[in-house]
Image (cartoon, rainbow, N blue to C red):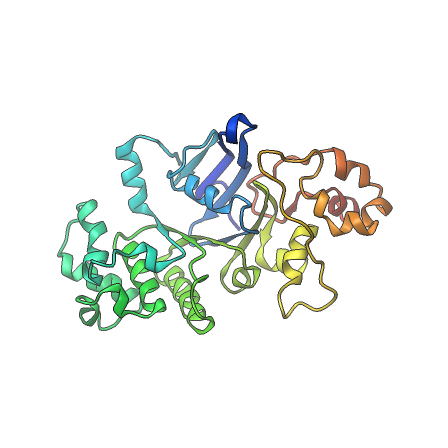
Length: 330
């Protein structure tokens, strides 16, 4: 289990606020998030589109400046100084969703992977380092791929090139934003297996951003479920996905084909982050409140009027839900 002492990456009270449109209220894209990623651990950050996952990931990498709170890596606060950020981004690498958009169509595979080595002036024999990264990413023999251009590769091969471009810098952490969303089902499994193998062989930590709880089940040690800028449930993958406590987590799970029972369908759209409602931010869409279960537990008024504090970075199972805490305290 991750403890503060073993955390590689941690966010404390992180807020990211964007200016409102036409003088309107500011949008609270990330609203007091606390999150940790341990050494050698894979954490899945899960939620609907627009819930703040990508903004949080970018803030953790120093690509977005937080409005409040902070990020620490390897026990040290993340600095916004350009030289410090450059050094940090060698140790923490981003893998984007669309490999076609991540690769310059005019650059060969060799040039794409070697680019990071040149930017960071990494010592060593460049050709050997590029070949090693491609091999670790599953592109063998690597020299066969050196002269190829992105359009000559399959989607899975392009994603492996992107991963190789991260691996060539020997990072300690990978932040993967929807890393298999654009791939066919058969290739998705291969890329997920690759990430697991890299964790086991290299000791890599990873934060995997996804809307797919099924993906989280296949790859993650822990899950953090995000809704409207906040983490609303977090804990070990078995606890969160086999015994979900938050109605939002249950609703996300209900759309998976292997989940038995009557689907808890989400109604409506998530609220505007510039106009977060009073009370629990999920209450307007909550099937537990709509069904009367929250009323029977005596917390319906709390759901509508009393906000819940942000969850701490404690990796043990936690939930931000009046009803869940009433029916199963702790």
